[in-house]
Amino acid sequence: MIGFLNINKPTGLSSAQVVAHIKRMCPKGTKIGHLGTLDPMANGVLPIAIGRATRLFDLMQNKKKEYIAIFNFGKTTDSLDATGQLLKVCDKIPNCEEIMNTLPRFVGEISQIPPVFSAKNVNGVRAYQMARQGKPVNLTPCKVKIYAFELLEQLDSSTFSFRIECGSGTYIRSLCRDLALALGTVAVMTSLTRTKSGPFCLENAQNFDKLDLSQMISVEQALNFEKIVLSDIELKTLLDGKILTLAQPNGDYLAFNNDKLQCILTIKDNFVSNKVWLR
Image (cartoon, rainbow, N blue to C red; front, side):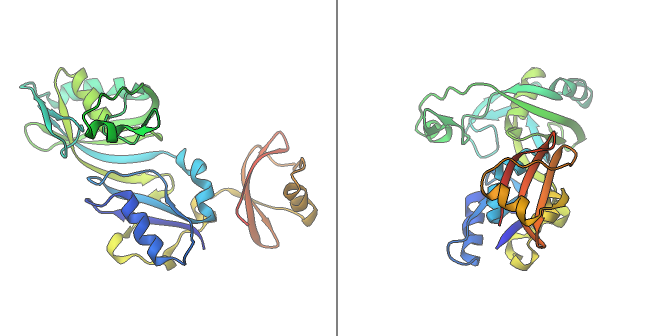
């Protein structure tokens, strides 16, 4: 088995629980992994790689993601979301104009400190494990990319919904915290839906309670790279670890031999510079 499942993860389940459920549906020993964690309180697109498609984790992680998030201003918690313990309240509630004037500060490459309740490693220990034990958690800022940060609507006097398009590693809870600080107040994320993750969209996602392995998405469909055909000699050259030149424009390719997908390879200046075997 090799390919991807596009799952609409429901609220209340961890990403690991979704993986465990799918693993029970697959032949014993099948490798399975998710492409980007969704917290239990979040829902939406959770791409699952199956079989040798798990080797494409790094390639798929670099794709853009899109979220619809709801922020409630005037209070915050230790986890920065609605599941945490209340830490602070504030009377300052921004209006739509104030929010829209502030959002451009958070578009582009920004520096962001992850939440203490996150899976970040601190000296080999997960940050959330230290936080749960009441230990101090010192996390260093990370560079993340925000492609779009839009106010969608005001839901009530203190609650607003947003559309966020971002790169890998972005914490929406941290955006909620930092936006509120820039507005002179505090806020908590009360809802999060991932609507896109790379080529996977919510409109095409399978409901978790109706999973169908026959609806697996092929590597070719997911990546949509150009295809090249390797001769037997070219394939053997790659398998032997030797240098191979191919007269193709720079870029990533799906490499086939005898109508079978062999690998994903990168060509730079006519040289094969990288490859991920899928055969």
